[in-house]
Length: 260
Image (cartoon, rainbow, N blue to C red; front, side, top):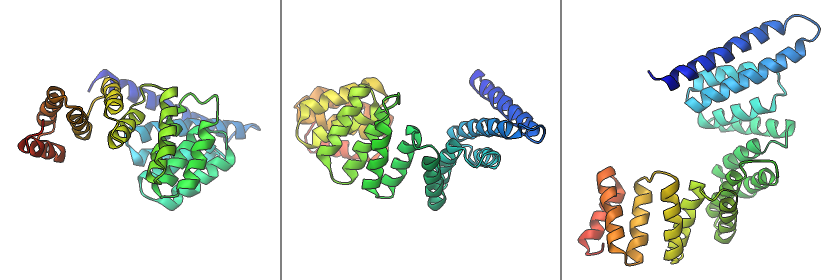
């Protein structure tokens, strides 16, 4: 089916083999606890891989095994929390997020995921506290993630000035981070700052592919600036790539009304 799939399959097979071997070693010798800890870490990695692939049943099996081997494995708790959230078992997700941060409060990735979970439950202040803890770690290489998430969460809470500050800081850390660029383009457009909106949208276009909502926003930005050719160019892409979308319907209505 392709080299990429073969390589992933071999990697998973190796991890699974190591997990089985380590689990077997855990029952022998005076140092079994250390072996079980190592087995738990490998099963956590295996669960994370399955989770990224969207294989929820295999992810659950691996992560539950990891926790059976080490109930104090903070990463396993944090990962299974994400899985329970995906399965919409929110009480279990919250329980495992809390356990993870109690066991290892210094893990910014777990703090970021817990913050996102809380924001989706409309618990904005608690979410922003988690994001703040994540972004405060100077060694965290992906600080743009909690910064952007804090910005999006502040927006949901109606705190637009605070949101823009977080998003700008996210882009200072990673200038090509698409979620922050996209939201800044939207905010600047809504504020009537069309030139700035255009700049963010151009950077966004260079950083990632554009969906129907992105193209429709680009059309409106260029239309607001009076750039009819640019607006029409985005409109052609919108019609071609997403002919049945709501955004295309709105663009066609704009054309019938004599704009762009």
